[in-house]
Image (cartoon, rainbow, N blue to C red):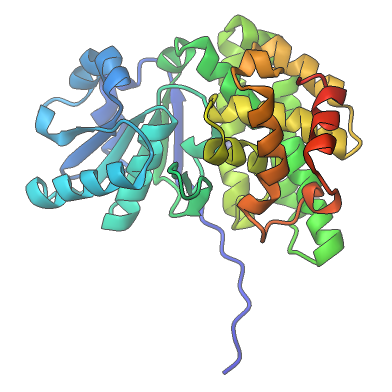
Length: 352
Ligand code: ZN
């Protein structure tokens, strides 16, 4: 039998961005998905948005709000167990919160074959819209494909008041596409990997626009944060068009994943990816100082000290980054990096 060569694109169906959406949430999602709902959120953010959420969803009771601490398999299994035991009639799962809550909700919905709506409360990474879930535990820390959200609902008032650090982290994840796309082009040229010019350019466009808004994002300007949210949503769409995380995740993400796996100290995903983008843009021969300046303007860390990660941990992550996903060809496959070389690179870009 001839194997069908197909390219499948899975995209979110609806994106709704506006002010005050959280306090009328059921009105907003009802035309998109109906039936009994469950909410997966984080304990801290739940306290912050509790009132709005209960205003927005009349009839919501605490038993249908599942609070998760991290995006680990343990938390995913726990949530699935709870839903199977007490809420067999659930027809819609809402992930409300930051990256972790949304990642867990997306995976739980996928495993239970239920539609999922993403309601991010901060623009901290592109997982708010993509079909990929990043699971963090000691065995591995990279993205697993599931299904994209049925809808993304962003209350810009809530997102705008997110902690500055989360917003700056989202900026780091958005500009990471500059090196991710370079790596993708390299993989096309060196190992003949499928490359989608449209998806690549969509991801690059987002990076370019947020770069222009770097200081606005750093100052917490509403329009600039809206641009960041839109860029992160487009990144998820770019991954959907590509059918892989390629346009969004390259060597800079491998570096961040290596920190998650091998370092004893960690920063936020987008913060680590931002610093990864400085390093990898240098290895690609791009203007790494431009990236660094933009990260600074956005209020994101650019050095070991600002990241709160020691030199040794950064050196180890840089050496081990290419082992995280050996199937993903990047600039790291073209350079031998030992301890001395890693130190040299990190010093050249001013990270250490
Ligand atoms: Zn990312």
